[in-house]
Amino acid sequence: QLQLQESGPGLVKPSETLSLTCTVSGGSISSSSYYWGWIRQPPGKGLEWIGSIYYSGSTYYNPSLKSRVTISVDTSKNQFSLKLSSVTAADTAVYYCARLVAAAAYYWGQGTLVTVSS
Amino acid sequence: QSALTQPASVSGSPGQSITISCTGTSSDVGSYNLVSWYLHHPGKAPKLMIYEGSKRPSGVSNRFSGSKSGNTASLTISGLQAEDEADYYCSSYTSSSLWVFGGGTKLTVL
Image (cartoon, rainbow over all chains, first blue to last red; front, side, top):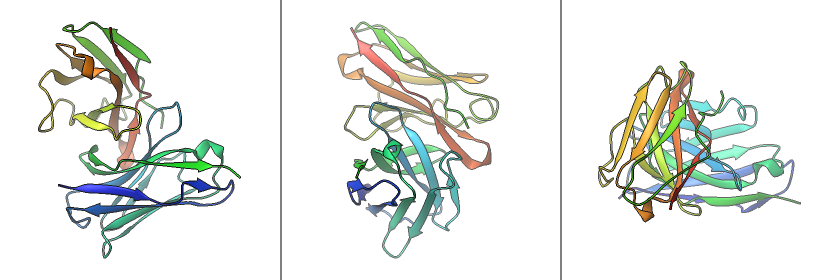
């Protein structure tokens, strides 16, 4: 059974960089069939796609976040990561990682709350 | 890239059928058969209910069905049950290999 688990600081100061890692178990992140993505949900709001990465390293970002987002993959650790720079309170959200096939997220992590506050 | 448009809320009584619409554009919903639907209970991970417009993952009840007409996709839930009460989100593949979600619909089972 594939499992994804987000990890990283739960509190980030304004203007700093948010960094999260998603660890994949029960399957290989190097499979050619899948993309790996980050999605977030601010409190009281809907889901927002942040970006996706292919195991080869090809990345696709939400245009509204593109200037601040970097997603990378570490196949040796079966992990992929999210960095979001210059964060503000508007970046406070539950962040999910997921595995995507044909633009559908079949497997999700449980989510991790990241609060941006001084 | 604008979010797909969903009604903020829908409601129905147990046993009834409801439909949630998801309106996009010719750059996303209208051009690709890659609409998916998710059930989301707050505090939990979203659950995939429909993919590629009308396909159900293994284990999802056949009470859930998806369809599309033009730039609008729809999720229909028949035989409504109390456990169906949740937030529902649609998403679609878009041009340039991007992905977009709808704003979400809160389903209330009366």
